Amino acid sequence: MKDIIKRILREEVKRRYEKPSPDVDKLVYGWLDKYMLNSQMYQEKTWESRTDFTWCKGGKEIMNLILFFDTDETIYNDDRPVEVRSLDESTIHIPKNIFNSILTYFPIRPNYLKFLIEEWFEDNFISKINSAMGRNDITIHKFDTYPDTARVCVPPMTKPDDVTEEEMIDYVCDTTLYKRDELIKREEEEPGFIEKVYLQKIRQKKREDLEGPLF
Image (cartoon, rainbow, N blue to C red; front, side):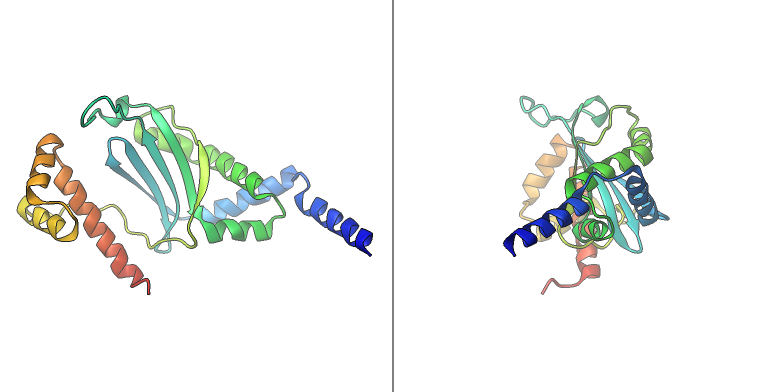
């Protein structure tokens, strides 16, 4: 009986994880095409060393690409523009439940699915990303998943015209550990710092309002 069980398990594993055919690859690509159909892409430069691309659909973030560019640690406040920095790392993310859902449709290894997603992304989006960044060196380094399900989509925000710097400082001080003097000093060293932090905080607040309390 043990030998029979071992043989059956070997056959099942072999059938499930045998090398996929080109037809399976096409089916996965088709699934991904449908998944991304009618999605909206948003670009956001958090700092000179980081730029995010987020795809939203149905009010949810269904995929993103995070790009990290080199930082010279020997320079205090490395403020070189992103255009002159080399790419350090690029990672595609999709929600974990979506990744697992694909695996239930197609009998392939998780690592092979990651490979297919990277290939599909480069075929469909990398030219657009390079164009948006004004570069030709963007490639995909790795793939990862969001924890669990997709977050609520909150597009990048712009500062309302009637919001003053003093109001932004007050808001940041009320919602972070920054002190007024520290913010003013950072603004002198890095113009636009206060507005960046302010926009990050109001965007985070809007997401929390839409998602509701965690408990």
